[in-house]
Amino acid sequence: MTKGIHVLNEVVQSKDYVLQIRVKNGPLMRAMRAAGFETAAELSRASGVGQGVIGKFLGLTQAPYTKKRGELRKGVLAIATVLHQHPDDLFPKQHLNDPLETNTAELEMSLEEIAGVMDGGVPLERQVEDRDLIATAMKCLGDREQYVIKRRFGLGCKPLTLEELGEDLGIQRERVRQIEGRAMRSLSTRLKKRLRVKSSDLGMRGVSPYWFTQLTAYPEIDSDEA
Image 1 (cartoon, rainbow, N blue to C red):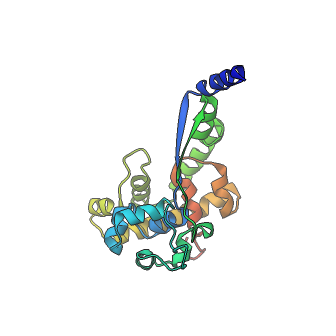
Image 2 (cartoon, helix red, strand yellow):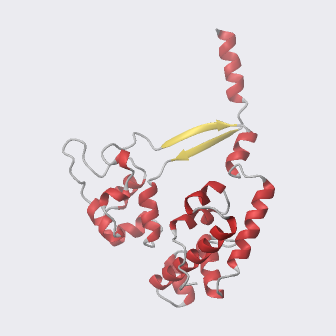
Image 3 (tube, one colour):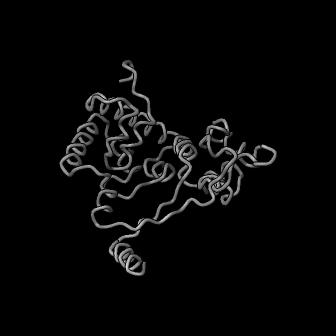
């Protein structure tokens, strides 16, 4: 028995990396981004709900409804109103009444395992191919649209918030959001046609950078818009 424990310890100790995982509320994060809110602090200022409370909702450590009476918690309606969403649509269905006990975890991994996680499991040649596709699709955008996309998602530079980009371009935050939305729809249309995949399948290609996976949130441009 002691020998078995010793062998197990050797296996565990051979893992050179520790991957820390923090689970987040996907529906709420997507709604925030669609409405132009980058952080819990920004949403807090707009909704009047405490940043700490929003943090719990984002981390799924607090459910929107109380478990005993099933009442909507204070603050959820204010957040939903600002985001123009129904409260139930801001949380996974399985967590409307049941929060996570913890939203963090640690996994010990080997070099091979961590490499697979960091590159999304996508072969190098595929990554190069996809970057070329993205670069080609970007050429369909106007100069200002390209600039907004690059600065919003940090493509080769530091990412900027809507407010920062608005100040940089001398326009309102809402106008920046509109430019970003149209650019993303345009990219979505062209990449889906090029890749010949459905919108729901795009995220499965494991393409970097991060913003490419967000294209699934934008509908394709109608023919009269293109």
